[in-house]
Image 1 (tube, helix red, strand yellow):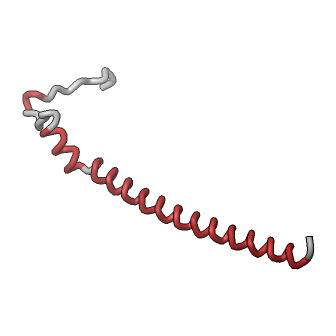
Image 2: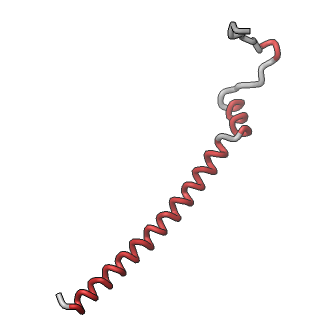
Image 3: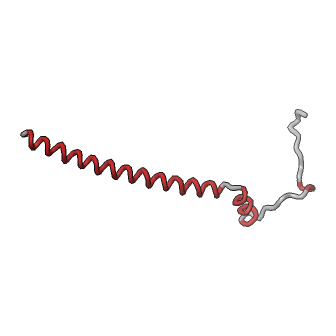
Length: 77
């Protein structure tokens, strides 16, 4: 391999690596955006308002009446 062909080979490799790096940066940014969307969805799903609405609509739960509350002692007190 001559010096000229070696130099050309290194330049081609540098360009290829540059494209790979650029692609990886793009993929990282896309993954960060996806993570933010998933985190937002998780936060909404775990919010008290959402859980309250879900309990009432899907599971037909309601706030118990005082007469429905039973305190159970652990035997230590």
